Image (cartoon, rainbow, N blue to C red; front, top):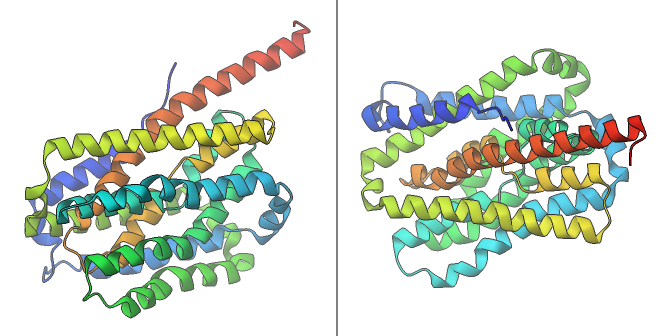
Length: 332
């Protein structure tokens, strides 16, 4: 069984190492304008995201509403509800920060590109995957802050939530709307240069990851994080994935989804977007010095989901080919 590793995961690790060795370039007051680059990059990421959304494809995808409902409820309700019950058990500030980081992961939308790629490898319902991944990103812009801000309010009472939402509108919501409005004019451009735009997205993410971890290393936040905490986060990430995956599988079986729709529900409903998570963390947690810790569960989950879903998708795709060959050959 073969699966393709993601070089972006290695780039993320190198970004964290660079932040550890050279944190001075990513902190407040640095001569390098990384904050300006990050803010402008976020706005452009979501502008191009809106530019790539086709209103016609969205309209056509509305028919399969049961599948869409399962994916969106799994993404924005099931995941947060799996983490929320542990909140009353928190006793220390460090525990609250780690829980908040995991809850932030749970409240994020699904991925776009990798979800579609994995559904394609497993030979699932690709149009439905495109629709759900795109819809998830749009919903997440509104839902994720609604899940997170009540707990930020308890963590830091001096945070200016008006400025947070204003920044969210300026850097995220307004660029998406502008991209959607200009889609008839620039949609072909976005499709033609999709690889270059993907490279741009990842470059900005690396900038933001470097900045977040630089601030955390510089302020000494990671001094309170032990290796056992990181191992615990890995176990939590794995548990989140398999529990959510199992529940989505059972619901798909109860609703009698065909094989293609079941694959789409499983892969789109169990994945979390590193792109949205990284750029939204910069807005939502801009007043916190623990930005690196907030991103840590998301980065771990990102690497694990690529590994696990690659293996599962490859296996499902192979089974589908064997089944199709049997049908073609007339064998039982």
